[in-house]
Image: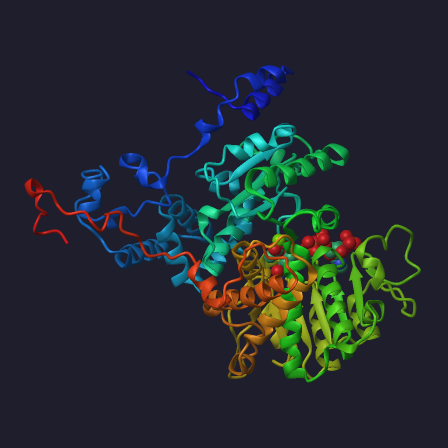
Length: 602
Ligand SMILES: NC(=O)C1=CN([C@@H]2O[C@H](COP(=O)(O)OP(=O)(O)OC[C@H]3O[C@@H](n4cnc5c(N)ncnc54)[C@H](OP(=O)(O)O)[C@@H]3O)[C@@H](O)[C@H]2O)C=CC1
Ligand SMILES: CC(=O)C(=O)O
Ligand SMILES: [Mg+2]
């Protein structure tokens, strides 16, 4: 018998122009039909199709017998190590990064433990594929890259039935969601439903960088349409073929989504907002921050990683934070998020008001320097507080640098190459050790390359970028650029929040994360010019960040896990996902006498 759930029927009704929602409810499937089987009961070919249980040729002979998969795999039994070797051999044979992304995604959908083992063991090589920059390319080409659905797609037509759609997700324990509506994917603009690559990529890092179980993570695309005409005309487009729904209907949809998550997964299910357009990002953060367990990664995660980079750079420049002059290029969610956290840090450190701290921060947007006599409407929103009276208006960045004489230049524009040679050279003339961050993603949107930053400052700048750049050789010296990306922050924040079940995530959490991250940079990292710990230490860094945040959660009674563990760090470490395969053979199991174990098999 054909069975359709409520949201499915509503969608069909919509497309047929039938508005019979009453009928929809009558044939909605029972809740019990939606529940997935306990993992221990999954056997046979179903097991081979379950990525969180699948081990490929690493299933032992005993397991193959017990689980009813004997004969469904080639006879050899391979170790996970050999499997990793095969994956990497194949990876190296792929002809371009998009093919590498597709190969890794296929592995993730097939064998989750192997995917994470390979990713963690080869982080420096593979992170640029599953994350920025390649994930950006994959989102642009998602119609081609798409292989199999992962996560949930909730559309504006599901309004009124979002809880039902969430109930279709087979895992009942979901601790973290990354959600986007695809309107501002990296610096690539509105990619609509193709933006699903971002929540999937971010959650892959939850597991790889912070050991959060993949089964506890849920990527969600909220498809309210797209205003990207190229996508609407793309025959491979996977989303709703309509313009974005905005205004009251969109906001009601978002409110319903937040409540439905709480109803389905509990009030401390973490919801990470990702790559919403600036106006919505701020609006939802203000509206939901105190009501739900949520944060906005582009505003708050980015703020913490950039503040950490600044704090680290001060160890080289010797200038106290409050004595720096910081010029932001771009005045959107990333820039304002950073500026607000930096101002908070300055006000705390120098014991001055937040407003006084804002006077050290300058902004330059698409219409030039933020000065008071700009036309009405150009200074609205969170950037408004960084407007200055005493400066001359200019649309020329070099001129702005000349006027302000900043010690630090931070780009978050999504405009590749906006830090021209003359801008960078000027920073080098004004400062012995200029701080230059080109935070925009993916790589071709970076405000300058690492090579340009080091070359035009004779190797003196303290540089970091949102997407990775290779080390730069200059006059016999090697400079290792840091990756100023929120991926240093959100995994640790999510780890503390999910393990200790925090009710909310406030600004203090991001100050703690920034300080802890900066403290993880060793003197030898600094000598090489690195403002962040090396990528290979990142799991450890996430745990350290989580420990410090969890102390705060207990001090402020935000944690819900009581009694508090005596040793927070070892408690966290005990919760981490392990990529080694588990045995499916019960300890008590022995080969039946009539089927003694074949001698040739281990
Ligand atoms: N490294 C990291 O961890 C992160 C990096 N980012 C990156 O930051 C970039 C910006 O993201 P986000 O803040 O969300 O985007 P927004 O759209 O919110 O902000 C972009 C800002 O850049 C300004 N801008 C656009 N063109 C120019 C120009 N030619 N000159 C000066 N300013 C300009 C815009 O001006 P106006 O306001 O006038 O339109 C706006 O203020 C993206 O590339 C994103 O990938 C984002 C989050 C994290
Ligand atoms: C890194 C990130 O979150 C962004 O570029 O949007
Ligand atoms: Mg983002």
